[in-house]
Image (cartoon, rainbow, N blue to C red; front, side, top):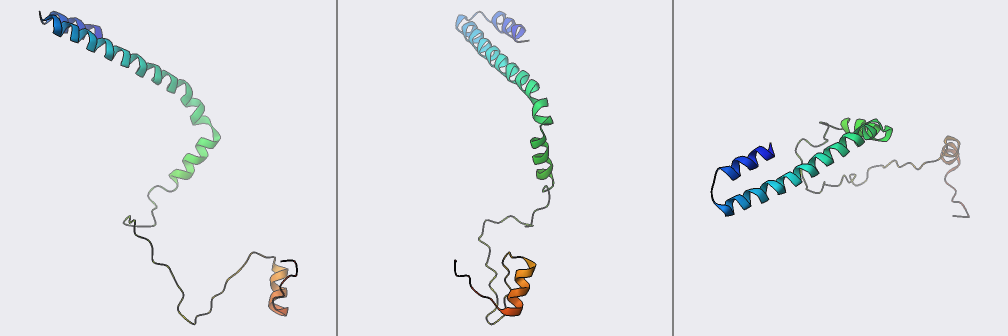
Length: 116
């Protein structure tokens, strides 16, 4: 089609400067078309490999699991207010330990280690 447009543009006028401009314009656009078609062909060759890759599929599924599930109804960039416990309340904090060690701490109290 680009050749047809070039012939129509060149034959539609007698102005030499416009003809030069038309030729340059269509040659530049033809070069861009060649680059775009080359990139498309590369994508078509590489796309099946990317789509069949296990890592890509797992990331895609994990990402799709979050679609439409925002914790905020209205997005805000304000800093959240910290949740500070009320003065005088009991705070239960747990550290990763075995069940046997937790029972020993509950029955005999906490004994700090000597090695840190």
